[in-house]
Length: 269
Ligand code: NAP
Image 1: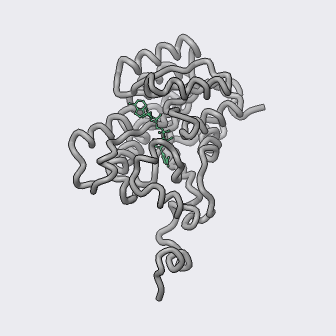
Image 2: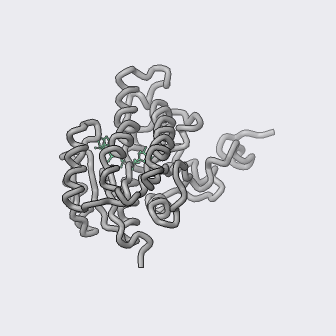
Image 3: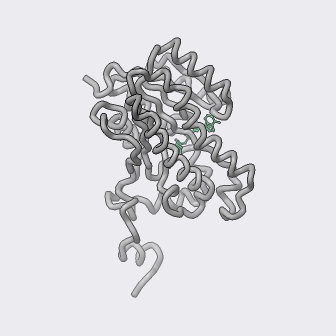
């Protein structure tokens, strides 16, 4: 018996086997959900189809979330295929590489708007398009990072986008609450993915993370998948508008411990 038996889930944002969305899809499948996948565009199909076959997933559809007509089309296809859905996962973000490499103050107008459109507005657009497919209520989950709350050097415009994403998540939770649709975010620690590779300084951050986080463990796609199962399940029935940290406890730290500072940075008294 799975925690998600009988539930239908649509997961946006699978690019390859490293994607957080794929970790979530696998966990949902393991827990008994019927899963559908969406990917950004034709270029990704050859990567995503074999993954879908691994789990026997039938619904595999492209959707560029910057295009209203593509969102409407996938919502219509999902209605034909599933009738209703119970779970929607938004695991999508994009910013121009240059905007993640130079100081935040240099962010271009176009780069700012692009990051906000793909990484933030898409959640609003998908929630609106799929609300009619959730007449019995449901769970919407998005992915965020602590750089939306505090400054994470190099995260730049994506940090600003995550702040807006978390706020959008709360406003959506308010709007959709009366319909029994819960909206939450998972704030994940650093995980090696395609999107993460675009963040300057990511490798160093990834290496340092297990030294600094209270649990001393890196975060995996499976860890995020398991937390998503909880948020998607009836066990989380009264939880909405929340950011759930899956980060080995990193967000509670104000400062690294002295031993780490001495060892890694040569700092001393
Ligand atoms: P990923 O595998 O690269 O996933 C990002 C996804 O967004 C890709 O499938 C990407 O497709 C898609 N996307 C970009 N533009 C799109 C568009 N216009 N329409 C539809 N899809 C589009 O990387 P990930 O790390 O799993 O990222 C998933 C989410 O987790 C993101 O919101 C990210 O910010 C968040 N997150 C990641 C980490 C981390 O350390 N990896 C930590 C915290 C939060 P393309 O490949 O075609 O662009």
